[in-house]
Image (cartoon, rainbow, N blue to C red; front, side, top):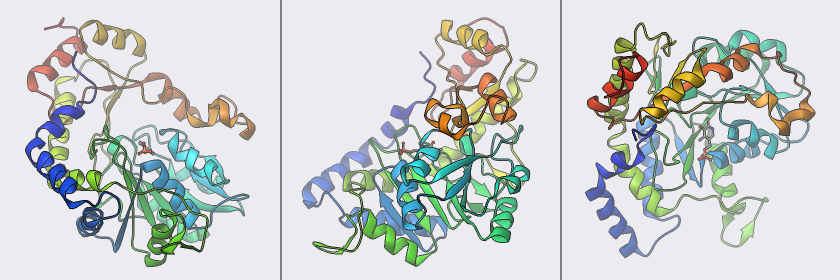
Length: 366
Ligand SMILES: *Cc1c(COP(=O)(O)O)cnc(C)c1O
């Protein structure tokens, strides 16, 4: 089987260094909040060009803690996209606020800035764009709306580590940015992990307290917090991966370019890279109005593919109380019916990609 995402090859390519780091951590006797987490936070801040990075337990917590640290909660609204992994909206609901969904752009699948203003209300507190599949959202347009209405901009950058917008890395574009190190993300570890990047020192200080039970001084608590820390082991692994990530992202971009070139005429809509930014193809998603048929064909040829995402968030069962109806956000609904991902990872092999291409071009299997 050619896997959709090959997490094993990526980590195996740095196995020697990971084994060394694991031994270092084991021998250090510091397993939580030790020197590796501090080093990772410092190195991440340097790479991203932000003042502070706060490591947490996972990407969902990164979102929840950020919203909480900004005091967003009951009675507040947060504008976001319906076409993303559930965690984006779940975090908004988790802090007691209401997600307000704005339809997406048909070319990039990211939130459509032209449709944001009509959804702003007196209780809107923030805009939460997602850099979906690895492509940065329209940040200038989003930020100018946010400044006009005095709203925060929180990037959900969980799928886009290393992607750039007008030469700047995602994570340095909004007031705060949330990342996930879940194994299948383009920068992943051997378990759960996440972080928040920000240049707001007050936010960073609040996040540091929140992730550790609302405590600044040991056994003294100034707020109700969380237990949401990144393990030393994951920080050590991520420090190794961080030295490789730009190279890995470049490899993804080369596979993406090759797919686009070789699949011309396959009857599939290819991902579009918007101007002034780099897409890192966390997922390589194409669309077809015969999605089921194409995916069956791939499966029969031993190729894994996957639907991202089959049900837009405004139509999820849990959000029935928000009273959206089918047809309310037509672009997201349409993409949910025809988009699917092809195998993509830095360590994909040309022979494997050729198998995928041949099946999609109807040239049979191997
Ligand atoms: C993966 C992901 C998350 C959640 O990250 P976890 O580490 O799995 O909690 C949030 N938002 C988006 C867009 C994601 O892809």
